[in-house]
Length: 333
Ligand code: PEP
Ligand code: MN
Image (tube, rainbow, N blue to C red; front, side, top):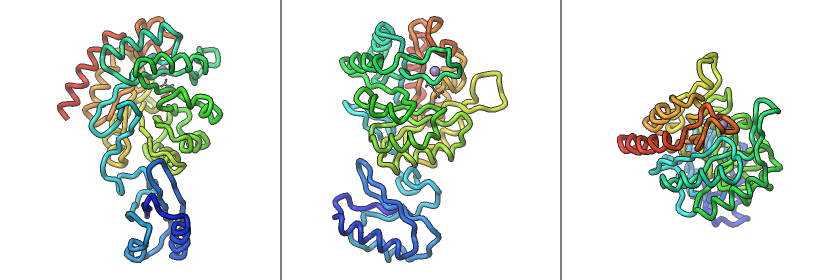
C-alpha cells in the first residue's frame, strides 16, 4: 500500500498517522521528495481501506501489488515528465535526443558537438568526463576540470548536460556542473550511489545493469525515488547474453514492458545497445517505434579519431539523417 500525504501536513499529524498505520500491523517507510510525501506500507495486513483513507492529512491511498512501489504505474497512471529546466522536458509528449561523444575530449570537441546540437535544435549533450573503462590503460576521461569547461560552454549555449557519476564523492564535486547525472550500467546496483543521488535531487538517468533484469532496474529506480528524488529517467542500453556477434543484446522488449510497469520516462541507448555504427540508426528507429521517450547517441565529427567507442559512434551527417527519421517515426506512433 502507498499513502500519499498532503504536502502541508503538520509534523504532529504526520507522526500520529504513522503511529496509527503501524498499529494496524504495517511496517512503514516514510518518503519525502521534491514534490511529495509518502508512506510505504508493507506487510500482509487485511484492513478496510476506509479505516485509513478517511484520516486527516491523507491525500490519497493506493493498493500497489508490485514489490517496488513509488516507481510503479499502478498508482501513478499518467506518464511522468521530468523538468530539466530552461524549457527542457523529458517524457510524456517529447522525444528527447541526447547526443555527444562517448568521452569528452577537450574544448574543440565540445564546441563541435554544441554546434552540431544547435544546428539540429537539440538541447541535451551526453558525454562522459569520468569514464568506466574495461581496461585501466584506456582513456579514462578529462575529469572535473573538463566538466567545468563543458558546463560553461554548454550553459552559454542553452545546452543541458548528461554525464556519468561513478562514485558517491563525485555527486557533490559534480553537482553544480551537471543537469542530469548518469548512472552507468556498471553502477546500476551501486546502492550507496543511488541513495546519494536520491538525496541530491537532480535528475538521474539510470542505466540497466550489464546483466540486470527489468525488475532490478525498477528496484534501483525505487532506491532513488525513496531517497527523495522523483526525477528519474530509465535507460535500456543492451544486456550481456551468450551472443557475441555484436557488443550487447539491445532488449527492445524492455521498452514497452518498462513503459507498462512504470510511469517514469524510458530512453534507449542504441550506441551501446548494438555497438556497431551501421546498426545504431535502425535500432534507434525501432526503439522509437517501440515507445521510447528518448534516444541516447554517441556522435562525433570524426569517429575514427574518437578517444573511445569510435566503432559505434555516428558521424554528424549520419546522425542528422537519423534525427529526421526519428521524428517521422515518432509521429507515426
Ligand atoms: C556511456 O554511456 O558512455 C557508458 C559508459 O555507458 P554504459 O554504462 O551503458 O556502458
Ligand atoms: Mn561509450
